[in-house]
Image 1 (spheres, one colour):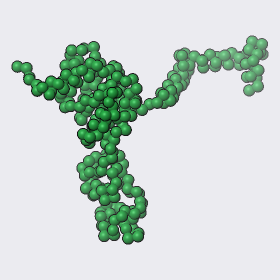
Image 2 (image 1 turned 180 degrees about the horizontal axis):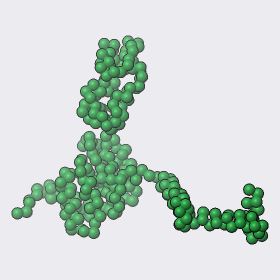
Image 3 (image 1 turned 120 degrees about the horizontal axis):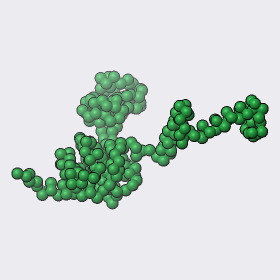
Image 4 (image 1 turned 45 degrees about the horizontal axis):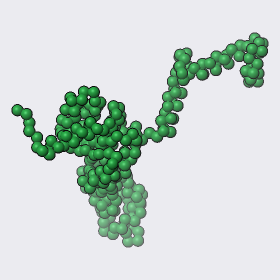
Length: 273
């Protein structure tokens, strides 16, 4: 007996299937600690350029498996193993995926440090007056924060590294940051992977500019030329060096033998050296 789905699920299956069929590019994002209003802002910013789709992983995987079965030539199967956690898909046909990612990254909101949350960044408390009365000195002593009394207020003497990245925020840390009105965290959609018309790669690739790519290409060419030359194996990257060095050696021999007429210009240059 086949399973009967609700009308809402059937509509979701059809909509997600149409996205897989009509869009050649997709950004996989995580949405931890992202509220509904923030999601609305992201959808609004991407309107006309991309569509955002979230849902239960089991439902998304079901739709994708069926789409792969019906379209065996598709490369969307590459994203299937990465549909874990609080994952969403942003579909687009625009070639400039870096611009889409920039829109996503820009839509972040500041958030306070709550007890029990894992710190996504290092949290520092700056030195200076806190606006708190001297009667609350014991609060800072518990947290091992050096203070002094100045102008009738508690003053933090040195910058304090309160919470390290990856650590769990304690009740004392959260209370202190709240008293100081510090909101150290910011949350938003985080792009993890990119599906680009059959290619699948990490989102960090989108941060590479043309200058970065050009520098990496030149660096790779230099390494290939050095390796090829050291093992005496001519390649496109090293052939110029092979010819130049061979020419210099012949000129050196000609200069040593006194046959300077063969390569007059080069022999004069080498002779000066």
